[in-house]
Length: 395
Image (cartoon, one colour):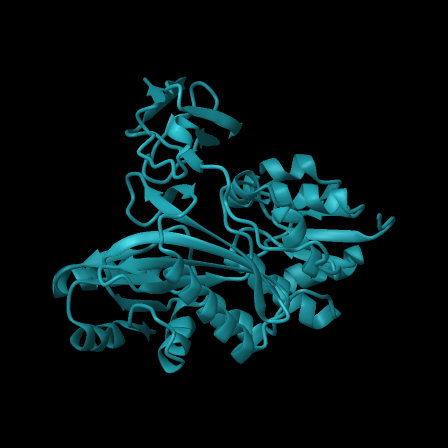
């Protein structure tokens, strides 16, 4: 089925958005990408590029109106998701919750308040608008703690405080990083970290997928995700129950819900982040490779006002790791040396680094993404570290 003449605006165009761009074109849409980075890889995959700062909802609405779009899809960014919800509310487009619900889910302080009031398992967190409120939160929570900007993702601005001095220093940096100049002070919870991605249909989880998260130099920036997850089935059922509780309480529309959770030391899953957009770094492709499902198509359909025919639960039947290629140190990129053993194979890749590129911050800079399948002993669950096997040469 095609939709000749209909226009889909993807409010972004990074490498992470390419699966959605391709899914839109496969459905017959004229796909327009946006954002203020004309060199992003996704723009080469779309039918047209229209520059706009998607963190500005008013400017994004003006763009969407001028283009006469029929549907809008958020990129792998919370600002994009919030702008899309605003545009959908003004233009009557499908696939989005109310602006108020979208802000509740994507702003960390509002989410922590909601989770606490509704007994959703997660770290205790207190939203703060100034340093005085931070000091009061620290007196209440004690140490150690994490302090996060309420509106940034990918580990940006997050810091760890083990005493009053370090906590106040971390808070100052978090305030400076936050566009809203708000932070959340959060108890520090230890345990393994995981992702959970699901499609809602009639406020029930119709499909779900979980992974194990892995980290490189930064403890707050996911550098790899592997499936199937090592989490016990009972823990995944608890997450499903929590998502459905949230969906019924907030009357969430059909579509994607993605979250991160910690398996705490007592074995209970604790939700730490929630969003209603695609996760970054080609996570959509991790789901596709591991389960064989058309995940990008399933995500896009509610945004496009289409039904979810064919949607069904599918387990991860292949052992796959999505691995972001990152350097151990600063320097000039000189190439890759892939040294996987016979039990592992790269099945897909996207590399954007070029020989001679300067690596200034190895903790955050990504040079590409590879998908590695584990074959050894027919055992599911490839586990990094793969960094030594996926070596990066620098000069």
